[in-house]
Image 1 (cartoon, rainbow, N blue to C red):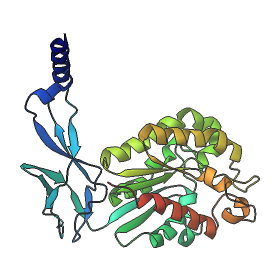
Image 2: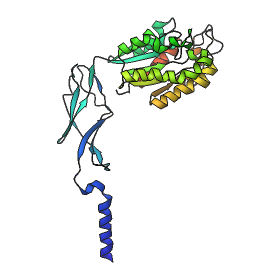
Image 3: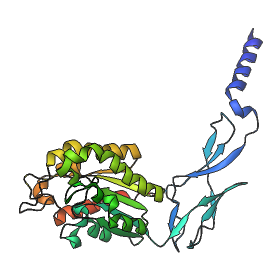
Image 4: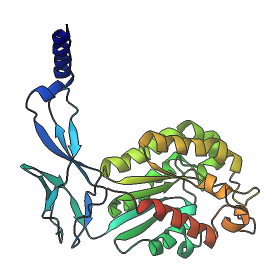
Length: 303
C-alpha cells in the first residue's frame, strides 16, 4: 500500500508540472521602459523589465533576468533600436531618438492664460521642466469641446476645427496635458448631448496620430459664482467633471483632478482664482501650482 501511495504522488507531481515535463521554448520580452530617447544621451534603463518567457501554449513560466545592452550609448538621431541580450537570447528593442521630449498643453483660456499668456500655467511649466523637455501652449480663449458655450454657439467652432489643433499636431507631442470642458458648461443645454462623444473624437484623432504619446486628463477646476463669464460652477462639478474622470478611466490616462486639489486647498478661491469678478482664471499662484502638478506627473511618464 505504501508503494502505491508513493507512485500516486509521483504521477501527480509529474502532471502538475505542465510543460516542465518537456523542453521549453523561450523568448526575451522587454516592457515598461523608454521607447523615446534623447539624442546624444545613453539609453535610460529606468523602469525597464526584461523577462525570459516560455512561448509554449498553456505555459506561464517566466523569470526576470539580468540583461546586457548593446548600441545603448550616445544615441544617434537615426537610431531605431538597441540590442538587449541574455545568455544566447537577444532582441532588438525599438526606440525613437529625438532632440527633446514635447509636452502639449491643450485647452481653453485656463491654458492660454486669458490676457496673461506670460503668466499661464504652460509658461511656468516651461520653467519647471528639465532641459530635455519642451512645452507647447495650445490653449485658445473661449474654446470648447462641442462648439457650444464660451465664445461660440456653433459646432463648427469646436477645438478640433481650429488652427490650434493643426498646430498641436505639427508639434508632435510625446505628452498631452488636456483641460477642456469649462466653456462647454456655459452652453450645457446644447453641449450635453454630444460632449462625451466629441471629446472622444478629439482624443481618438490625436491618439491615431501619436499612438505612443502619454496623457494627463486634467479635471476642470471650480469657478466662483458670480463671475463675469457666466461659467456655472455647479454645471462643471455635476456634469463636466464626472465625464472627464470617466474618459480618463476609459482611456487609461493619468488624472490630475484640479477640482479636488483646489477644494482641498485652504482659501483656494482667493489664492488660485483671479479677483475683481473674474473668479475663473488662475492667479500667478494658481498657474504655478497647476504647472508644478503637471510636471510632477509628466516627469515620471515613460513613452
